[in-house]
Image (cartoon, rainbow, N blue to C red):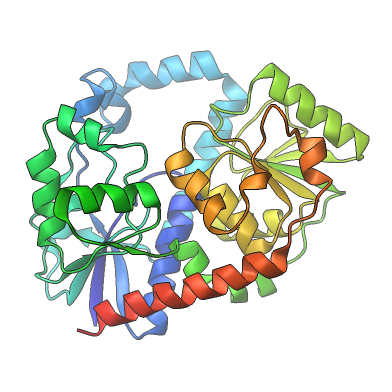
Length: 361
């Protein structure tokens, strides 16, 4: 059997590639060849100027020259190297197939995971099942991200979104916001499943990965545009100094960290596994912490729809940094990993049942 996957395959984001690779590995264990299908994304909602950032052409030159000027040489070079590492990872893992209209004889197309239903850039038909090269299209762990029903209405996409959802054979999501939107628009109950990274687990890879050869460290995993507030930095540095920890940022560049490390997505998992503690503000940073049982703290930044829901599912809402609960207090209490892992085992079983049911028909 051969499946296509519609997801964010062209982003330079470790979490996005980890989830794509994880879904491919899960399907491979079931005797299915799978890969991401290429397609063109719609960036109409960004405006004509910002589209140049994503549609690489000669028009992109002013944007990237300005990026170099604003961000500096070190950060720019870091991100150039990161792009090369992630592109090599995609090639070596055979993650990407052909352009979707050129693919023939697919047994099914899976839409997901990640923010495939988010509309903040523009309405991309492939994310909604339109014109895909199979009559058997279903969703695994779809997510609307920051998109709300109000956004869908204001962008005049109600019929576009509703029609796509209703045409799919089965629907599953990874957060309650996405569940509620689908219920409101279609009357259907989408199944709640776990992210492919948690579903697959990377158990074999984690066993094979060598230990990180660094003195004890606090790991930062946050987009380079985030976690640069002076107050946050002072609190992190104070905690690290008090516990004799160096501060490592893996995957993203933060000039205030002691080390910035470029790494491929699978090797990144070992930086979580071997960290003294982790501070993150991303969904997949929290997923990787859960997977590796890393003591972690989370800063929510308007991503409560998916990240807040994830922490609630695993009984980890007390890992959220608040004005009343700083990192010193938070890290003074250890996570009960027996409870977390038991919940993960249950959710993994339910998610695998959903996937098995839909690939078998």
